[in-house]
Image (cartoon, rainbow, N blue to C red; front, side, top):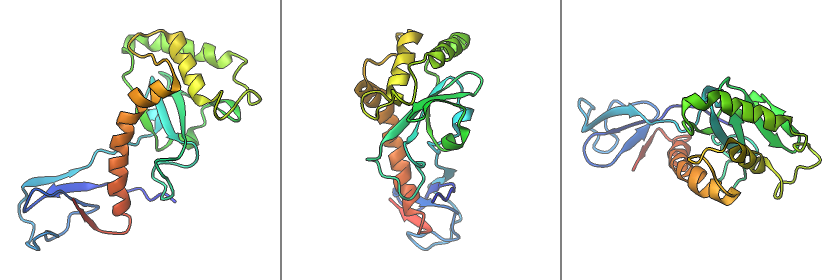
Length: 202
């Protein structure tokens, strides 16, 4: 079950960061009334977004559920899709090619600004041509050998942008996904501590 809330961070009486869902009246570290701060409260940037909001992007989510589910673990499999310049979502899974299943992508990690905006028309053309290819059927899908990552790799290959090209699934994971996943997991660590506590000090 997902409980969506914002995370606020501030510092008051030392170098330790204080995370909360709502700024308290007194400092949880020194118990003094919060009249001033060594670092004023700010909202922690949320690494998750609605896939529809990120045009010309690659998006990832857990294969089942969303990152904010209490049951999510970093060892769970990921699912990857592509968004065009018109906010349409293209993906491939055990159902075959899937178009605009917006319900699954409301809390995902997006990778945008991958190519110049001037590529938008070409990005869309390559994506539509790829989606029309009859190879993306449910009968050909295999969770290891022929899956969503193959769909995205094929898109990259046909797009032909030298600054946005990965040779293998491992290359995509290591160079594109992993750095942003590390940030997301740090956020999730704090988020999960605040599910059952008002304050987390680190």
